[in-house]
Structures are given as C-alpha cells and as structure tokens.
Image (cartoon, rainbow, N blue to C red; front, side, top):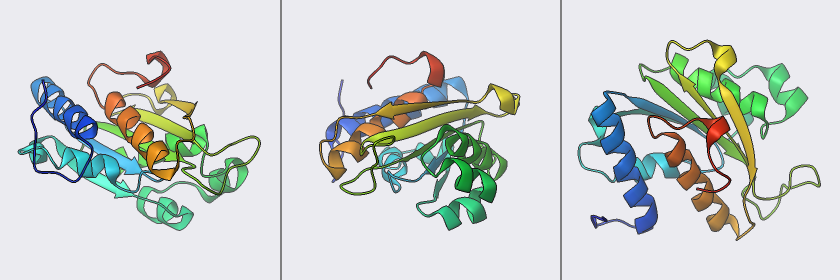
Length: 181
C-alpha cells in the first residue's frame, strides 16, 4: 500500500524507502549508506519518510575517489588496483561507513551510470553493492556486481537506488537476492 508524500522523487522509490524505515525500526536497527553513482539518491528517498531520523543515521556521498579515501578510509591501493567500480571498493565503502558511524547496518553502492565511463569489462549500468553489519567479521561482508539495463543515466541510478534500498531490508543479504530489485 502506497502512502503518497509531497516529493519530487519517483513514488516507487519513496514506497520502498518507507518499507525500509518501517522494517528497520521494527527490527531495532539503524542504517548508514556509502553512495557513489547514486549521488545521495538513496538517502534522499529515506529522508522523504517522516521520522526516518530514528533509523537513518548517515549518508556518505563519496562520488570521487578522493572522497572515498578521505571520508570512508578506502585504501588507495585498492582503488588503483581494482577501480572504483569493484567488489573490493564496495566492500571497503561499506566497512568505512560502519566505521565512521554508529549504525548497525551499512550498504554501499558504486557504479557507472553513464552515458560515458563504461568499458567492455564494466559497461554503463555496472553497479556494485555491499552490505556490512556491525559486529560481523569483515570477511563475511559480501559484495555483488549487477549490470542494470542501460536506460539512460537516470534509469541506471533509479535501478541502483531501488536495489540499495532492497539490501537495507533487515534480512536481505547481497549474495542471496534475486536478479532484479
């Protein structure tokens, strides 16, 4: 059931954000984000929900590599070796978001929204996600790479934001989610 808020964001995004806030509130969990290609879109959706502040604590919008280094502590060698759009960097972003917040759960998203920047190995629409839980062994943090249909920059960002919200559901795991949000 959809609750319509006065928003500029797509209703589908706001509806999913409402589910995330309610589910995490019920589970007693707080959340943080580390966003790159979505540029704060996931956080914007969460803050459309009245009362989100008791669940949603931080959003690190680390669009540039320098921001990933400075705000999240991503290792320079990891960035150089694997590139910003890689499971290793998504993993480091999620761990960094937990380490720089008091949140129980952190989800990271890094990718190529286009229209430029894609390669044969990492085409436009390639997005990598990771989810980290406070108290878990960092070796248990899973990262997953998806290639969303290139529906233009906005379409890729929307698909990535919806997927990140799906991962913020309390029982969601990166390695067990179905192929699409």
